[in-house]
Amino acid sequence: YLVLWFLGLILSLAHAARQKRVAAAFHRSHPGLAEFALNIEGFPPDATDEVKIRQLLRETFRSDALEVSVCYDFHAHRGRVHELWEKILVQEDVRSGAYGPSLARLGALGLSSEDRAEVRRWVEEGTLTNAGSVFAIFPHFYDLQNARRMLLGGSGDTGAGPCTSSNVPMLPHSATPEWLLV
Image 1 (cartoon, rainbow, N blue to C red):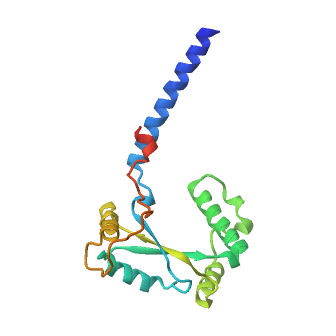
Image 2 (cartoon, rainbow, N blue to C red; image 1 turned 90 degrees about the vertical axis):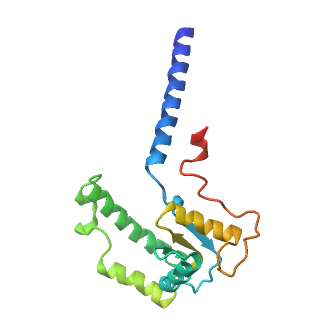
């Protein structure tokens, strides 16, 4: 039994080492959104105009290709948002071949034009407000690093000095999670 135990231990350790190598290789070849996005907090609830926010951030970070994503507070519509999200997930599952089209209710996949109009109404009526955050999405990793340097070091002519908070998040740490580098 001792031989079987050692054999099991050796196989387990070999499997763990291989899994770590596979995960590290995956993270190297599949960049995540965190490597291109900066979460900017402190926006007021009425800051929902993506065009104005995009223009402000493009001027601030001197990046014409920057895009934004407003983090909406959808608690007033939580149930309906989950229904709409489920429709989108089913559509993508069917499109990828994971499930057959019979999974959709009444043959409808994805959001209908009525669903889209309903969500647009929420924004126009002001029932969807900014949750206080906006993601600035940069086209290249080095654009994100320049923006972080600008915020933390005060370089550039933004008019703002360096960020003085000692707990400023420094994500992304690296292209590969630290636990994979050990």
